[in-house]
Length: 99
Image 1 (tube, rainbow, N blue to C red):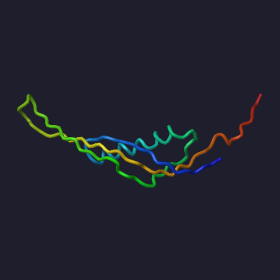
Image 2: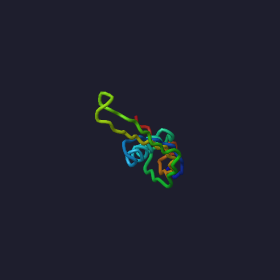
Image 3: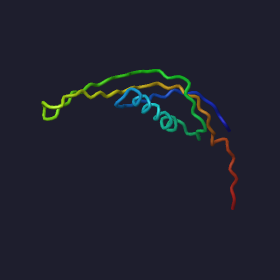
Image 4: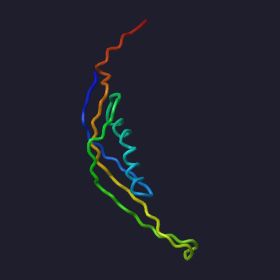
């Protein structure tokens, strides 16, 4: 009934800071694992994280094209996260029919 398996999911995230980009990507791990597995998930434990892409985009801004010039930075990351999943297999649960 209770199963353990290991899987790797690819997630991505964006943010105004490097830490925000990583946090955004890691927040998507649970939803990605839930989409891929038909089981009821009990626990998701990250085992390993590999960075596939880490990008920084710099954009120059100015008010009325001349005033208050500044650079805006946006970070994006794509990660492969290996997770150990503990789940309940509903196919192995015997349900009793009541009438």
